[in-house]
Length: 234
Ligand SMILES: C[S@@+](CC[C@H](N)C(=O)[O-])C[C@H]1O[C@@H](n2cnc3c(N)ncnc32)[C@H](O)[C@@H]1O
Image 1: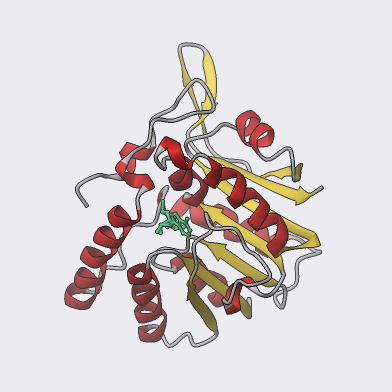
Image 2: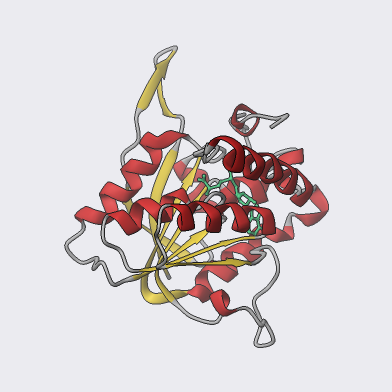
């Protein structure tokens, strides 16, 4: 990739980030073209955004909750290479769906799942910055899920060109529509702090739990590089 995940790790004081290449579909299509080629040539699954630790923390948290069953439906929003779902399948989860607006990402995710002989994951192309309506003809968007997971996708949507800032609101409403009323939304971000996420999502979601992430100390201030939150629809 010409840009690395470091490009997405630029903190900002307010709610608005400048738009970036990472907020464009072209960027992701090109990135996944390269990752698909690499996967075919050398079997490298590509980037696990925010690192494997971050992914493992989410999976461990889901796995340890007494009120989460392995049969609960899980939607991974902006699934990328789909590796999070593969790991969830290995933990025994059976109702797994991944969506991404990049058809190349979906192709990569399908190829990886196929070569690991995991047939139980459904992958679909879907754009979460487009409103879901009664006319939306997409299998993945026609059902409700008990758990929606987002690692880095809302961050990417937040980097869309400023004329598309409405995309964030559409995204939030879409997640709300896709979740069961008793469901949970697990969001992991490195662009937004906990307070900012709670503020941005306040119209449709309320805080439920933190998934603890490592803290760092700089100049006496303690902060988190990555924020993982569990929200519930309000
Ligand atoms: C930072 S990557 C994270 C990928 C994966 N979740 C992970 O953690 O490895 C952001 C992902 O969001 C996808 N994405 C960005 N905007 C999207 C949108 N509007 N609808 C669906 N997927 C989107 C990108 O194609 C990319 O796969």
